[in-house]
Image 1 (cartoon, rainbow, N blue to C red):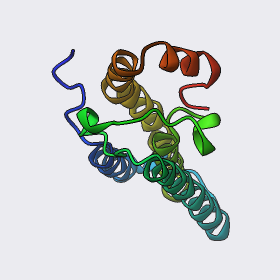
Image 2 (cartoon, rainbow, N blue to C red):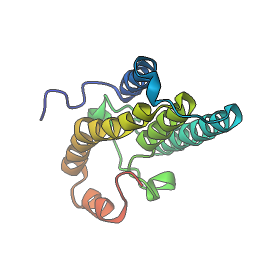
Image 3 (cartoon, one colour):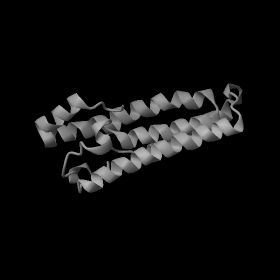
Length: 155
C-alpha cells in the first residue's frame, strides 16, 4: 500500500482542493470566464445541495446497516452496504464531494478551478477508494466482487 493511502481524510482533501481552486483563480485572473451572478449562484447552490444530499443518503444507508461511514476507520466496517443510493454508485459520498467542488468551480468561474476537479478525482480514486476496495474485497470476498461487477465506482 502506498504511503499516502488512507492518510488524508476526504473532507480535508476537499478543503485542500477548494483552497487550491481559490488560489489559482486569484493567481491567474486572466483565465476567469463570465457567468452572470444568478447563474453562478444557481449552479453553486444546486450542485452543492445535490452533493450534500448524496453524502447524507450515503451516511444514512451506513447508519441503517449499523456500520461506520468513517473512511479512516475501515477496520470497524461490519457490513457491506449495497442498498439505497449504493445501488447506483459505490461511492456516493465521494461523488457528492465532487459535485460540491464542481459548484465551487462554477462560483469561482475560473478555468483552472475546473482543471483541479480531475486531480481530486484521481487522488481520491488512487489513495482512498482503491485501498478501501482492497479491504472490502478481503473482508467480503465474492459478495463484494459481485457488487463490483454490478455497480460502478463513481456513476
